[in-house]
Amino acid sequence: MSKIRITKQFSFETGHALYGYDGKCKNVHGHSYNLYVTVIGTPISDTTDVKYGMVIDFGDLKKIVKEEIVDVFDHATVFNKNTPHVDLAKELQARDHNVLLVDYQPTSEMMVIDFSEKIKQRLPNNIKLHSLKLSETASSFAEWFASDND
Ligand SMILES: Nc1nc2c(c(=O)[nH]1)N=C([C@H](O)[C@H](O)COP(=O)(O)OP(=O)(O)OP(=O)(O)O)CN2
Ligand SMILES: [Zn+2]
Image 1 (cartoon, rainbow, N blue to C red):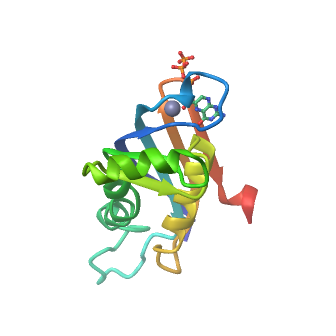
Image 2: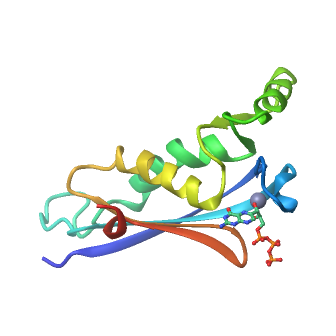
């Protein structure tokens, strides 16, 4: 049976700031992120399986990505916890804001690496993460490919 790639798109609104950056993105601001998740596998060939003909049910993929990423990042503001922004984060958290402290500079590149690790650990053994595309503006995106990183 052929290997097939399937893709599901997700969107979420997230704030961030790039501490130490030499441009406007050092300021706290937000993006309407789009995330394209592509997995690869063989469509189920067992005619008695309720998932017959599917690599993975889009709904099952949605559940994984929603729990690991969308529900965590949507309407949160992301700061690098290794920078003085941690003080700002603590102040916001004390005022009941949804703040996410991460162990990296929250660029598209670093976020997509983080997302790849989170999604990979939730996929069934027979399904492989093929690639991710994360766009933060209409003209800017970062991509992760398993083939570049295995
Ligand atoms: N390699 C990266 N460069 C920049 C990132 C990033 O994640 N990776 N992020 C930013 C800012 O967070 C912000 O996204 C600005 O990006 P940019 O595409 O420059 O946004 P503009 O609105 O200026 O884009 P135009 O569509 O060209 O107006 C900065 N750099
Ligand atoms: Zn930005």
